[in-house]
Amino acid sequence: MDVFSSYNLIIEVSAIIIISFLFLSISRKTNIPSVLLLIILGLGLQYAIKYSESKLIDFRPILEILGIIGLIMIVLEAALELELKKESIMPIVKSLVVALIGLVGSAALAAWILYDFIPEMTWQSAWIYATPLSILSSAIIIPSVNGLNKEKREFHVYESTFSDILGIMMFYFLTAQLDPAESSGVIGFAGNFVLTVVISLVASYAIILIFQRIKSNVKLFLLIAVLLLLYAVGKQLHLSSLIIILIFGLVIANMKLFFKGKLSKFLHYEKAHKIYHELHTITAETAFVVRTFFFVVFGITIVVSSLFNYEVALISSLIMLSIYALRFVILRIFVGPDIFPQVFVAPRGLITVLLFYAIPAQVIIPEFEAGILLFIIIGTSLIMTGGMIFEKNRSNKALKQANKNAVGTGSWTAPKLED
Image (cartoon, rainbow, N blue to C red; front, side, top):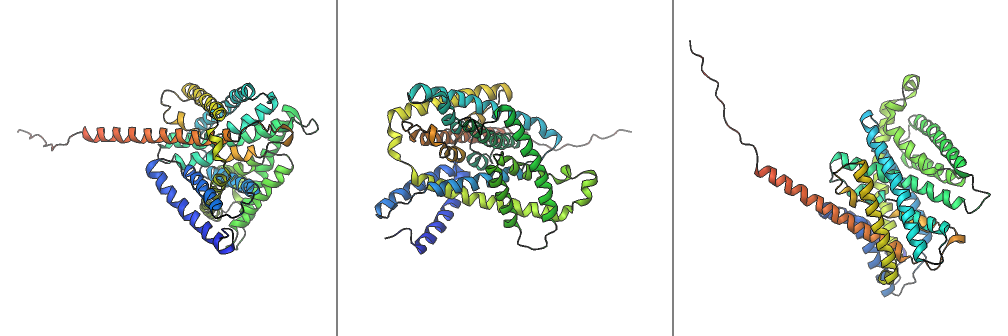
């Protein structure tokens, strides 16, 4: 039976979306990341395809396209939820600092481990391989922290989003150093960043002002197409394209803040807010679908046997140990004593896979086992699951104790006044 025939594909795609929705419900009740369940589903499909004796197609190009679109949708979804207020400044700055130190520190430690254990690794290639392994996965974190209180939830949304953006910028900065003709150094990199921010702000204002005047009801996918176009063109021009998506999301989510003074005259707030509301919905739906198929396809491409390699397990375990040891120290310094379950929330995922496949050919090390990538993704997801379950049980226990020791109530009678 050909599992890739037209009608079979329709059945399979529909079934995967339905199962993914069920995984979301399971995730809310058990705190097991739905992404982990999707990878397991992909593994099951891999064996089903082999059993059916169908020819296994090359999923890598599909994985790359799904990863790019998924990344854009996830960052846009996160940006649309960020409300910029005076009281948000410190949490945002704190999250940015934690994300930056965590990224660079984790990459340095992972690079040292890879350089030490894989003889063929140079320092340059070790840093390039280590960077994807050091980026937090907002694709896993954002859907998984809904059960936490507002302060912790916002911290994770900010931190994972910043980690995505900074990690991608760091990866392409490192790969640019391979070609002296393309390398512009730190100053050029900073100039590139500033230029991207300026272009992002101009594009964001222009998109909002133009789209609020479009009367057609069919315009949201047009808007998404414009954003995808800006991202792709930005990448071709070596700009930090993800910043374009982030800034657009922040501008449309905080229009009253960005359209002040004379600019407020050009904004039709009700029309623009309607676009924001509808975009928020369609972005969340699209991110869900793309994330679903990315991790299912990733599961199909996994070579399970690599997980049982002793060297893979050793290197992966050391990298994970360095991740959580460093994370504990950073959170203890910048967040304070209440760092649970935040210390466990450090999964790797979509961007790790996406950047791994983007490693330039001239630094690819054949001796590097792809199982390390898989081991760390699954391991960090399981550790996060354990941390979230621990936090849920701790909260339930505290709630039961509070209910058990509830303050009693009684009637009160006003004293009588004597003549």
